[in-house]
Length: 191
Length: 191
Image (spheres, rainbow over the protein chains, first blue to last red):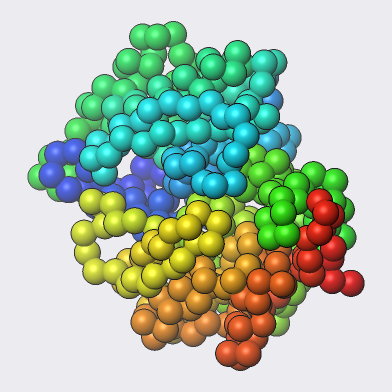
């Protein structure tokens, strides 16, 4: 997706060889016009696939999921929660997700009421790095006996291997910008 | 906002005298069509007020802020973060926010880069209860020497006093559904 790559080059900040910060337009401050283009692009990438629900994880995935849902005919969005608030008192599915960026392991949870057999689930997130969040969400879908029909990431950091692992498991993975490497402050995309 | 009140009556779950769960359509599973109506309604309520940026706090406010931003001409959304991820290494503004629901106090932070003097900020959130989140965000706006032009909540729990405190401080507050009381599983709206 050219507009996205151009924006990453213009406003993304490369740190070391592993991190690219996109907090000026994607996951702290959000450019909603770009977000809309991202939603349209996901709809194009997963065209022809029946999707009944979009699953993401708080917080950065929410805006992406909601904008994309419009282009799938306003299907519901479900966002997994990272902690267990007091108000989530009923049954939930749960999976562990390690964050390499934050150095933490969290429980991601969704209420059993909102992920059910028969659901055809598209997982969306901002980054696909080591794949931990996607595997965690896939586990929630498995527990619910729902069907995982695809996984979409706005930015895939190919060199961290998550996309490869997911594709090897047979999942359909679409990433709108794929970064091959980060070197000397430069972000190199897979062409 | 009638469609919202109707939905709260149909699908909201009253717990005790203080909590109303709207996790089936607003803050866990999200109905994006209703969300779009919410965005349009906020634009109507704050019509004629110049807004340059929408500020919210993760996670439940993000979808609301992004959808509303479209109806303000695609202005940027900024969502305050509740913890300090390793990637937020540069300067930030910070305020304490107590959550009565979760029984916790968190730090909410925004990068200094994205909230600046001259910004005309509209604060949006899902709930306005005791007003802690709104006062925390107002404090971030104050630290940035930006201008707070309005505060919008999807659901105000009037009996918890946050709206009153904010209005007494001179802030313009608009709530799309105002709950007067919750009794015996019944949600009573202010007419």
